[in-house]
Length: 172
Image (cartoon, rainbow, N blue to C red; front, top):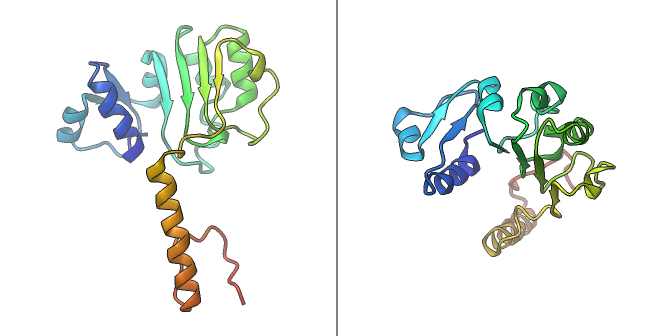
């Protein structure tokens, strides 16, 4: 994906003259592609050509196990996979197999398919980096989350709608 987070990553990589390939449902305007040094390609072409595949997309029924055995079979044996999006986007058992069979060179995961559990095998591999879901652990992100919570507490006290509801349970 090349939404807000993907574009932020692309901007930084472009500063190092890294070619950027991306795939998503809707192509960006050419002017934005030019700013980012990004080239729109199919998902298959991206998997075949990329040295580093970074995932920046939401978890949906369509993206669950988007990176699976078939995807790993298309990737370069020297490719690296980075998942800081959502764990279930990657079929981690397929990842373990791909790493054991040298289909790809390595992986870095900040999120896990069955979080907080890590798929057996990943933690013992020397070509895998695992971090404890730190993607949002910046002062700015945490301040933003605290602000949202405080605003929602005030809204609830005033019987106003609250933002970012993740379920449909309404307090009595």
